Amino acid sequence: MSNPTAEYRLHILLEMQQQNALRMLEVLQQECDALKGNDLQAFEQTMDAKLKHINDLEQQELSSFPELEEIVGSPCDRRQLEAFIINSKNPQLVARWQSLHTALKQCHEQNLLNQRILDASHAQLQQALSLLRGENHEQTSSCTYQDSGKSDRRPTQGQSIAIA
Image 1 (cartoon, rainbow, N blue to C red):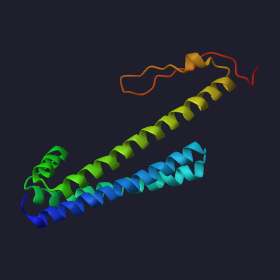
Image 2 (image 1 turned 60 degrees about the horizontal axis):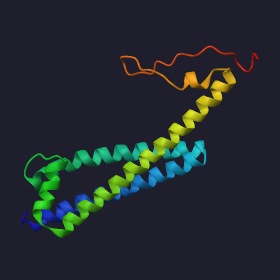
Image 3 (image 1 turned 30 degrees about the vertical axis):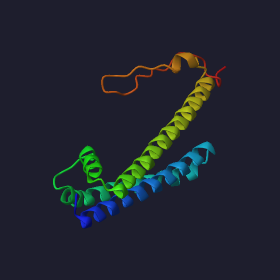
Image 4 (image 1 turned 180 degrees about the vertical axis):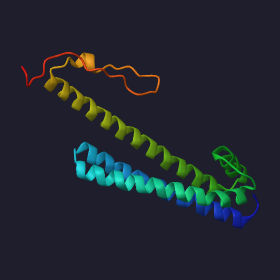
């Protein structure tokens, strides 16, 4: 890529994407704080912000496709764009690309952490409900899946703590 204008436009697009990724990371960290603090109101607000941000990201991505195709010269996916940037031998573009991927990786890791927290909370809640219902927790913790992919969790027989 020898066109300085195209390089500049691509640099600006990558910078915008990195800023969006960092904003998403901020939202994911707020979500984590709400989960750790068992703050339902903060969690709901964070989820609203997260969904709005995801929608904004999707719209921005759709609107940037034509410009990326014009810069790269053909319809491109992530691999083609990465190859294009590396082949440009422009250190600023390569650095911006790497920074974007670092931010995206951090978002992915934070999202996984948040999911683990949610899963642990769900397991604790299920265990507490099982105890209240008089169910054997070992039997309720395992489940199978139907052909549709939905859980095939069947209630076990036990005596509810309310009846006992």
